[in-house]
Image 1: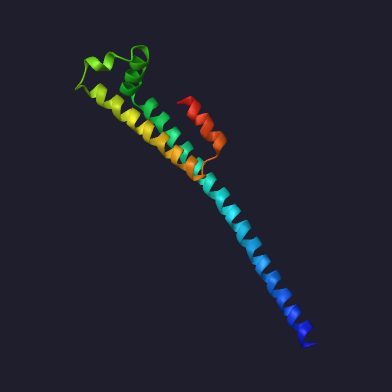
Image 2: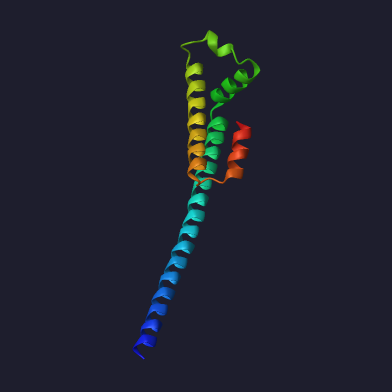
Length: 121
């Protein structure tokens, strides 16, 4: 009788451990999904803010358009405010992309989204 009671206790303990592991696994999965979602939202908000900055700054728009038409024009103006504006714009853009790449490597950014970002830049 003691042996069967002991076996019953061991089975209950094993079931408790298995249940706990399943619970932890589910929690980790939900946390991973939430982290990925938060990362994607932050990337989206950064992209929107970048577009707002372009649209709300007429001089930045002009500098970007001029740079697309003639990428070398800025070399003739080494100390201009336009050059500073363009440099800061691209530094910000590259920092954003670097951050996205970091999250991609860390597994908190969806690989298919990274592929899309990688192709656009």
